[in-house]
Amino acid sequence: MKILAIGAHLDDIELACGGTLARAIEKGHQVKMVVMTKSGYKNFDGKIIRTEDEAKSEGISAAKSLGINDLEILDFPIINVPYNSATVESLDKIITSFNPDLIFTHWNHDTHQDHRNTSLATLSAARYKNNIFMYEPFPPSGRSYAPFNPQMYVDITQVMDKKIEALKKHKSQHKKYGDNWIEAANGRARLRGFEIYSKYAETFEVVRYNLDL
Image (cartoon, rainbow, N blue to C red; front, side, top):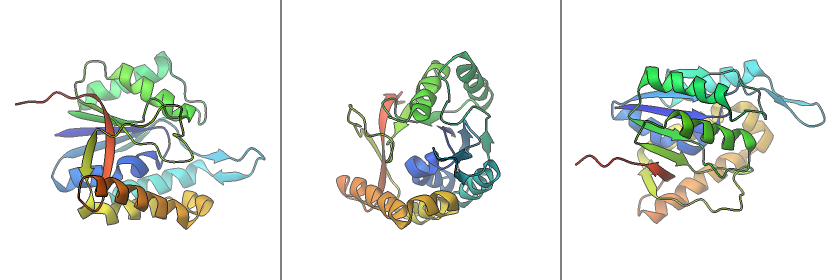
């Protein structure tokens, strides 16, 4: 099975569905990650939080720690990823070429404009695909007027260590948010696991799912 995960920034995918992808790799499935931006950015006061080179290096290392070697980084502007024909066409080309069986993307009510527009562009580009899931947002984004509705759960207990390892590869983000960032990701997965009587899990909203009996 081919699985495509699409995110706005380098670290988004690992935070939201890194465990799911690691488990898919262990099961022998083919996984491709696509990130819309080079993900270097500055604070509002001009202080550099992460350079593009740092973001790329961290992203490649994080993907490899999940077992993923296919990472494609696009060149849309960070904090200004558009939802227009350019983003839709870029993703359409990738989807047509890779021909995934499952697609994961951001939640369409995410409060981060890059996340929301990436989700919308994915839904447009994947209009002919039947299995699409939106992953759970992670603070500080996602604090929306609409609640995230977890509908599909994936038990990631056996690969939780790989998810945490991948997050730690994003050293610039770990430095920015501190150990609370890692602890919060662990706590979220623990909560979702408790809901399905396992130890750790990740959750998704279902856009479309074709149940093949």
